[in-house]
Length: 441
Image 1 (spheres, rainbow, N blue to C red):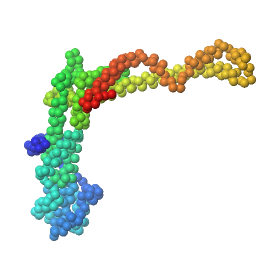
Image 2 (cartoon, rainbow, N blue to C red; image 1 turned 90 degrees about the horizontal axis):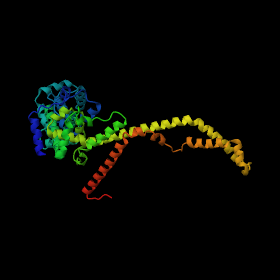
Image 3 (cartoon, helix red, strand yellow; image 1 turned 90 degrees about the vertical axis):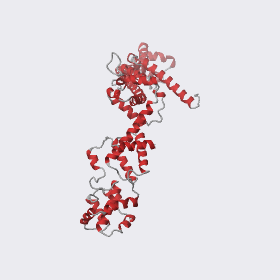
Image 4 (cartoon, helix red, strand yellow; image 1 turned 180 degrees about the vertical axis):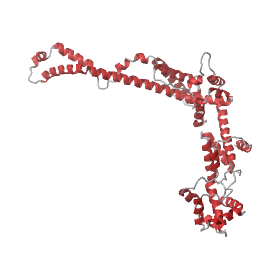
């Protein structure tokens, strides 16, 4: 860590031209931007008993007001202003009322005098403020900044704002805007290089060679394998599902699921993978080998779950489409046959009325039924009811089977894929348990 600290400090001191702030952001750094809110006035510009005790030794009104302005400004901004009187009007009124000064024009005498520089040193000594380069505060700050840059993928501007808050909270005076900019860029670059170096050391030479092929256009084709792999299916169809399953197989060829990436921050890995999905292939080719392999490794390891989800989502959409279509067809068929079912039900109702008549002689029951309904009509009604009625838990399975021609386009490939996925997962489970000293049941 000490070597890293010295590298970052040297980079910042050498004036590395890395600027990411806009001119407006740079102009607002270490200055008042508008008037503080009432909540901010109460939090940063209220003089407590300790402050008033220090102010009691100042004999002149302009000295007391100037000292109070410098003290509250460094609390609020984290730095001293070159012109301590350049403050919003509500700040001046708030502090003047607390030190019982009605004539605000006396403040001009404080700007003209030399005591304001002595007050800066007195405030720093009394309240524990440190210069940016003082140790060990600077080392602690750089270590905190590096930890933040390593574990998160926050933008440089967000890191800059967080660094300002850290320095203000820890009573470290803000440095020049360019100094802090260069330091943040250097720390971020160091974290990125460490990430590339660690990822580059993971794959085998065979895997490295396979990763390099992602950026090579095969003979007779117009796209690189990376271009095909990073584009998700756009249609819901059997051929699209087959292509999605082949996309899964292509990602699995790199065997990245067996690499231990637990020590790599997940957010950084995903950010690196996103870069591989959006960057031009020409740009990826121009990267150094260490960074290029790290980026492609992050893509293949992260997108293994993505392509799995794409294939399963597509399969789910296909099955939902087939099921809804089969249900709709079954319901329409039922509506078409409801007239025949009603007619058959009426015939059976007539026969059942004879059966339920308790006055009928059981010996002549059959003859009485045939008098009401002929045997031919009764048999036809029973057959019609048997054919047209459906059980309560029917899910239109027969109509779904009628879509076999559509499903046969992807079901064989899906079955093979499912079996292979199960075998690979079982093998990975066995390897993990053997590595942990356990034997799977």
